[in-house]
Image (cartoon, rainbow, N blue to C red; front, side, top):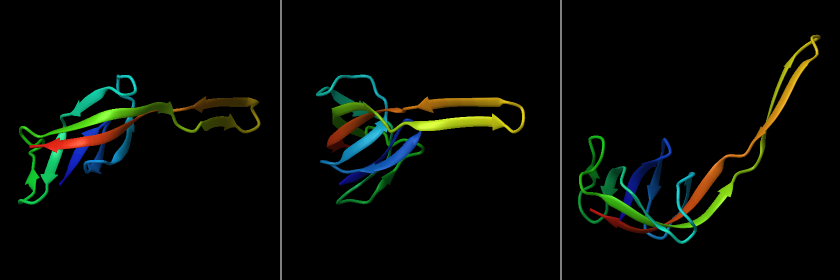
Length: 103
């Protein structure tokens, strides 16, 4: 059985036991979470596609890590004018282990 979920503006195909890295979610390591934005559920029967969400479908998971991604550097410059700006950014993420797909 697998499902397509939406989290943080991105879609992902998940199955029980998968590790998924999504945009930061509130919660501590070990907390259970429920991802309710399920777009598709498929398995032994015919796939169920939502319009836009599948009614009654839920994906349950456990937070395994909270972290920050690699640093990216943003550098802006205007030639011959002495204008230079350098900034760094590290995006926060949450790693989730998918435990069950319901519905």
